Image 1 (tube, rainbow, N blue to C red):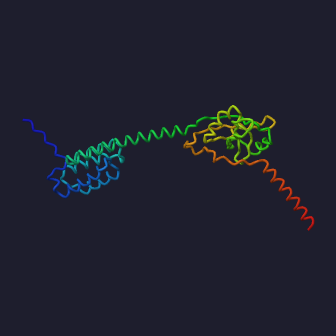
Image 2 (image 1 turned 90 degrees about the vertical axis):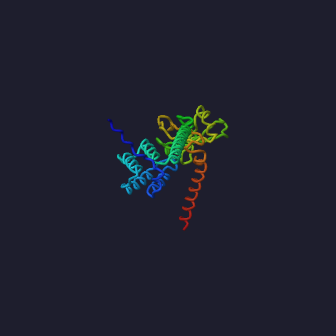
Image 3 (image 1 turned 45 degrees about the vertical axis):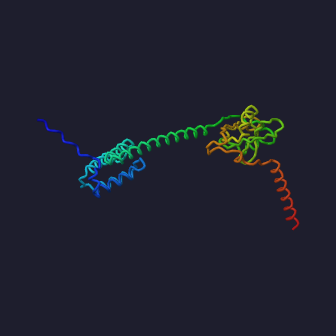
Length: 277
């Protein structure tokens, strides 16, 4: 006659077991661990510590949980699959009402995490969209031969020199006029009309800009910079681009000439004063 298979001991805490301090202590710990539907690393550590301290316990729940925790911690890390598996192992130990509540909280937490991950992904996509340039440009600066701008280019322009596009709506020759300004505040020319007609409306709307000298052409009468760069939406989250308030103030050539005259006059006065003393 075949032997009847031995019945596996009940893992969940029974009513009679819960009359003992040991079982009540374990139940309180598990209720805390399952309260928010998530199982954190520190909660696993706390559970392991309790199980180690009560390793001599005769409660089937203790043996069941010790085996589960040891399995999960065997390789020194806890994957998400192992975390869920351990949560389910803990749920099997709980009394029926606590078990149902813990399972419900775990499912709710998982749904919340999925929703949060989807929202984070959507925000990342939106951030990436906003970070993309609205347009790019690449042009040879116009008008460099006028007003001594070639000398400024010769002195201040080189590859990778930052430049700034500045609207000049009062320009009598073109309502789309866009100046090209250096960090010093000196203007070296204009954006060509074809490009200016495209860029001016965006600049008028507060577009952010990032531009620099691509190269300097030196074969003509004056060196001429070639500028390239990008425009971004006014609210784009890009740290390397600047808006209208980040553009250097214009340094007029006239003010520089006045300063030179003042210095020359001062030198004359100094010579006269030293000669008469």
